[in-house]
Image (tube, rainbow, N blue to C red; front, side):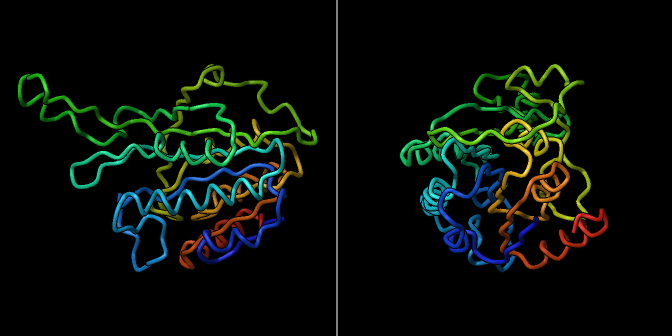
Length: 251
């Protein structure tokens, strides 16, 4: 089952029943890192960084309520630059997860190819490697993994990692970013979602993505025999996502 809900996730998540979600896989909008159109309710549109964290804090509180005992959250984010200042989103939002009762399990590093990162080291090279002029090119993002305390029911699964790559044995995953921007202008790769769903859920579980975008999480969940709920503010992205799912006979 795929359940697509249009609107503000901070409100619509309140309609989801207690202890009904086995796994959340999501990537929230980054703090003021891109233009979010006319969506005044978008979590990425903020007057301050504190406002942004407050919105995410409210979401984390609801995630704890809707997650089954022993269920998981996979939260993809990274530090961002805004007007020359860098904001440590993963480390700041971590406090909310701990405060509401989640256990911290993993900090998976999603490593992209060197050429895919945002260029910041140019001034260091131009200044003949002068101290204090070095800034790293940004080629990685975090996937923070949390667990709600308790024990969950074990379900069905198939071994889908017979031919796994060696990076699966570490917390540094080498996955190319998604280059097809037909469905969304900032998509995350299906392989990243696939690994997380297979590692942290069983068949017939229910997966949630409160920032569903072009429905990538829902698509992969359906392919892996999971149910999925996706919440998305943008009617435009929902329309594109539905077209995508229909083309692959998933909707």
